[in-house]
Image (tube, rainbow, N blue to C red; front, side, top):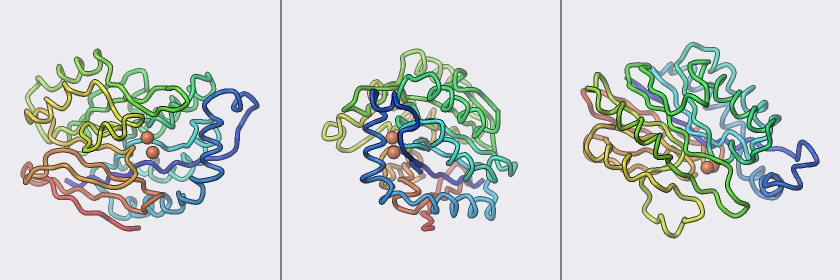
Amino acid sequence: MKIIHFSDPHGGGPAEDWMAYFDKRWVGVFNYRFRRRFQHDLSKLEKAVKYILEVKPDLAVCTGDLTSSGQPGEFERVKAILAPLVESGIPLVYTPGNHDCYVKRPWCVKAMKDAVYEVNQRRFSFDEMPCYLELGGAEVIMLNTSRPSNLLCSWGFVQGKDSRKIAEICEKEKKCPRILVTHYPLIEDNKWLRIRHTLFRQGKLVKLLKEGKIDLVLCGHVHKHFLKVDETGHGQCCSGSVTRNGNIVEIECNDGKFDFKTIDL
Ligand SMILES: [Fe+2]
Ligand SMILES: [Fe+2]
């Protein structure tokens, strides 16, 4: 089976209502205006969609940060680019990133939840996560670890009830490769250097990965691609940002082994 993994397109835009100047969105909007729009090239996301439509993998995975500040207009712009893929019939899954869950404003939360439902081809809703799917020859576990946080931090947390539910799912006998899809890497080299941007309370999930009850973790958030896998390819793949680095990852799974190839767009 073939999986294509991409992440962190970070579509952005201006403040969409005056309240954006009184919540965390002003950080995201400022960042987008003076930095991200020069660094993230959304045409690379269009190329990724075209490539996926040509290759027709068994599964396509997006690990979050569609937007910069989680505003409705930002989601609409990125969803328009993803639409041919969403409608193609190629199974696609998406978990939100911290930028997609930037603030608690109800219209931003609704836009994020709508995006989760639509980009996941209406298979499940945000409130049903973590959830289990059998898709494209894989067992897929969809986890959200992104929630609004304070102005200075972009950290994520695994909720206790979520790791308990995933442990229950993992008790069942595996029928095919079991893949956890989440935004934040479970394992990072320089966790304490990146403390404002890292994931907490992931210990139980790391244990499941080490015990082989989860075969592969697909994640984003870190914008540079990296792999932490053993000789059989089991472990963690972070695809990096598709629009920042212009790459996606193609994963072949045969006889329980994973092979990774970086595709430059
Ligand atoms: Fe990101
Ligand atoms: Fe992120």
